[in-house]
Amino acid sequence: MKNEQFVLTGRIVRLEPLGHQHLGGLVAAATADPSIYTWSPIPQAKLETTRYIQTAIDWFEAGTATAFATIRIADGAVIGSTRFFNIERWDWPAGHLRHGRAHPDACEIGHTWLTAPALRTGANTEAKLLMLTHAFEQWQMLRVCLHADERNLRSRAAIERIGGKFEGILRAHRMAADFIARNSARYSIVAEEWPELKVKLIEKLR
Image 1: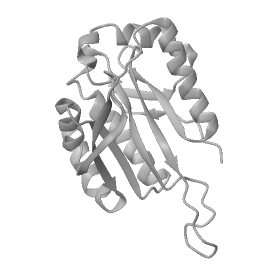
Image 2: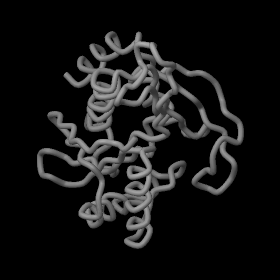
Image 3: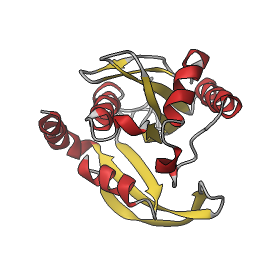
Image 4: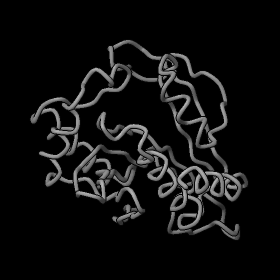
């Protein structure tokens, strides 16, 4: 089943399907202050960013991810990227209420980064609000997962601020930005928690 393309628009940011038209903006955003990406593999040059975008497109066409360029509404600048990925469609039995659904059942939100000047501006909080609203209210998902390098205390704190519940450490889970087998801190939000978390996220943005 193929993914759908859509735009998510808030007051601070707009999330639009990531494509090669965002190349220049992504390169500029990533190179503003590379030192902030210690724990995240962010492309730092035109060739790397071209491959980064193409991989996102390939995953989209395979039905496993939907990637976005994060656009600052005030000036239209590309300030980062984020995506739904590891999109899961469960094999519900015939007769089940969720059998034959057009939308996925669970996913991960990740590959999220912002340029240095966009940190602590509300951009990340609003982007997560937009994505979680779509996941739980449009797709009617049951679970959204988020992971961070165990050492990345800033990202872990950000996930906890939006309401992610810590589930544990996945050992040797993925390749880290420094090319070791990283341990990942795993967080999740489930459908039953979303109404209360949505209110809290909206209050944070205010």
